[in-house]
Amino acid sequence: MSKTWFITGASRGFGLRIARLALEGGANVVATARRAEAVREALGDHPNLLAVSLDVTNEAQAQEAVSGAAGRFGRIDVLLNNAGFGLLGAVEEASAEDVERVYRTNVFGLLNVTRAVLPVMRGQRSGRILNISSIGGYRGSAGFGVYSSTKFAVEGLSESLHAELAPLGISVTVVEPGYFRTDFLDSSSLSVSATRIDDYNATAGAVRGRAVDLNHAQPGNPDKLAEVLVAFADAPNPPVRLPLGSDTVSAIEAKHAADAAILAEWHEVSVSTDFSRS
Image (cartoon, rainbow, N blue to C red):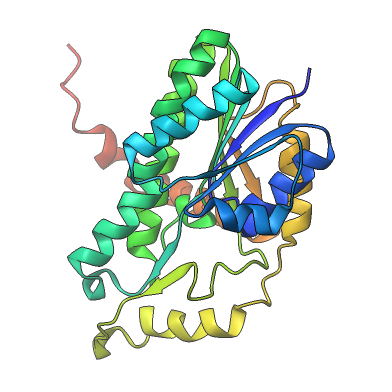
């Protein structure tokens, strides 16, 4: 039986590539974006495609989209929570509006769609949820503090969902891409804080400049990522997290080493706060 994918942010980037590959492999695909027309323009007409307008920040719209998907294909086997965008700037430079907007999409939007899909998957007693996080979801860095905090939230939610849903036959994996050669660093996917504070020129300010230089020169191949994730939908015993990209692997290894050094240096202080054992 053909799998049915439900993909958010499917009009470009990772979402579009994965939707196209899934269709080519014979899957049913519910491809969502703010404008269904953008999906149809990108993917063309296909008998297994359902293009749906979905603003993930609109909970009622998410419920309607899932209802339409289940009505058309009868089930949802893979949910790819891909919709999201970045925010570049020092934490202090980010306005309240900046912060709220990125959280509405990256965190609350993911929750809206996940809560809408879960009753379908629970009824099936099967399903796979892939939540797109980031290298910034595993370690924070100057210039991407607010964005990283949204992806840290996605990581925590994914780990908890993994524990809650495994007994119901539903797997959850948080996907951690590094820098891939998509339009993520373009203005269409990356907001930049309007405020600039000179005291951050050597840290967050320097990252602003590097982001411009790195744009469309990232090391990761997005077509290879799409191939991995489409194949991963059939992988047995999927892990709770899937790092993708050599830069993500290096960042995780460096963080593990740094955390191990902290534990070694501060071990006595860390364990000293327990009640004394009699």
